[in-house]
Amino acid sequence: MKSSFVVPTDLDPVQRHPKAAKAGERMRMHNPMCFGCGEESPNGLRLEMFAGEEFTVDAAMRVQTQFEGGPGVIHGGVLSTAFDDVMGMVPLLVGPSAVTVHLEVDYIKPIPVETTLQFRASLLGRQRRKIYTEGIAHYGDPTQPVAVAHGIFVTINAREHFADHLENSQLSDEYKRRLSRP
Ligand SMILES: CCCCCCCC/C=C\CCCCCCCC(=O)SCCNC(=O)CCNC(=O)[C@H](O)C(C)(C)COP(=O)(O)OP(=O)(O)OC[C@H]1O[C@@H](n2cnc3c(N)ncnc32)[C@H](O)[C@@H]1OP(=O)(O)O
Image (cartoon, rainbow, N blue to C red):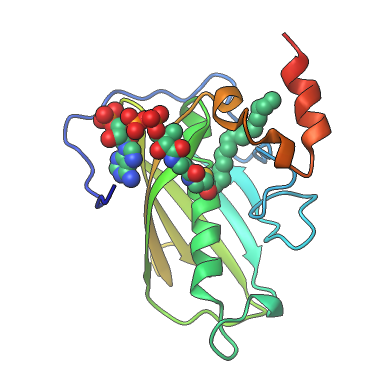
């Protein structure tokens, strides 16, 4: 399927989920082995996510030297991974887990390694299972972004969606234990 990013005009109303993290609170990891935000991922990006006001998520990422793409600057694919993960937390403010179906990134300025990049992801709207998000990367002033991303996430039943793949997880035993609970 080839799609482009167009936020529909006939959006559904959204409310913050009663169990969602409050503004300023750290958001729970969806998976400790996640390459983007997992604390147990051995070579991951180690993004730290915080819920913001309304439907926003803030995150910070140290641009490690191993993230280099062009000489001295971040690899574009690493940056898109970070956007994917930060924007992927926005659905959790609204309700169920969701996975990426569409992601696009505009790269505005080169981003040197050994800097700390800030991210802010925002909800643009929801229509049925589709959640439209925007992400910006900046050095502290969100009005001066160095990259901007747009993503569509589709809500899933996480148990069903991942059922056939849990065996491959580095935490497969833990997930099998969880699945065996009623
Ligand atoms: C004890 C076990 C529990 C485990 C607990 C774990 C908790 C973890 C929780 C959460 C994890 C979050 C992880 C975040 C990490 C960062 C995010 C990623 O990197 S995710 C990885 C990359 N993404 C994928 O692998 C998706 C692959 N795609 C799919 O699997 C399917 O496409 C799926 C399930 C998303 C949708 O398939 P359908 O058959 O259910 O539904 P259909 O009807 O095709 O789509 C639903 C709606 O979405 C639109 N849609 C689908 N694809 C689209 C696209 N590319 N662009 C625009 N719209 C699209 C469709 O047009 C439809 O819209 P209309 O409701 O009819 O209006």
